[in-house]
Image 1 (tube, rainbow, N blue to C red):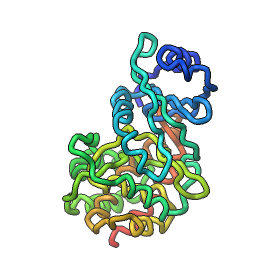
Image 2 (cartoon, one colour):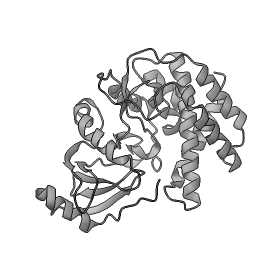
Image 3 (tube, rainbow, N blue to C red):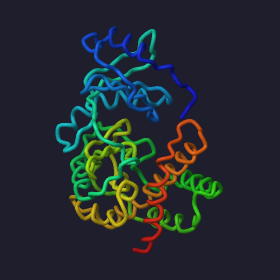
Image 4 (cartoon, rainbow, N blue to C red):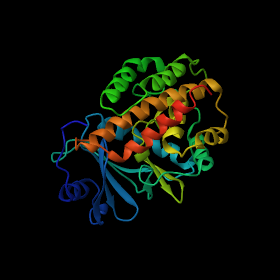
Length: 301
């Protein structure tokens, strides 16, 4: 997260609404969450305002959601934050912003999912062939070998910080994943950022998926990696058995590599939270540690 934080207040948001969407300006307004890219403010009972606040890339991600997510949302079995209005840059706030539907639920890093079969059906509904003009990922969903430098740096840093006790076992999982054949199927729609804070749960199962800023088309292995970090022990296999069409062995091997990369990233974000650094989220630590334990325990399966 960068230091380019904008002073977003209730007064600012009401000003923007009155200026561009006055029919919404008098609704109750309160801060909902501080995300990596955006602040989310609840607007009445059924809407939310999302404003970029900490990364320069957030502007393009919000515009991408505004274009594509309304087209995909009707076919998804879970609630997603469907864009309703686009706010354009103005004199007082020089960045785009969105009004979306509000998605209720608890983030999975606080209330983990425990029912993997239902979760698999949700992901399968999103993973369908994308049109040629669908966006590409930001170093995601392509050949895993292209992440070699990021993996090496992440593993070395996590080991130095004492966050990983058996780096060789983690490296073995990733190296096996890199050796798997690349995806040869059609580019499929992917969420692109299925970490625990972007999955909402209720009564042990997924009830919502938020933050589609990284939506792109590519190898489904990237999203399938989420099973190891979002679900409890022993649930990843059931998740992948329920997912349709059933992923082949090569796809699952690549998914394990992407899961390692996601877990390393979450470990660093959790460590930043423990030490009070910007962007840190200590609740991301337990699911990341659990994911690496599961992955290394099944390295030869």
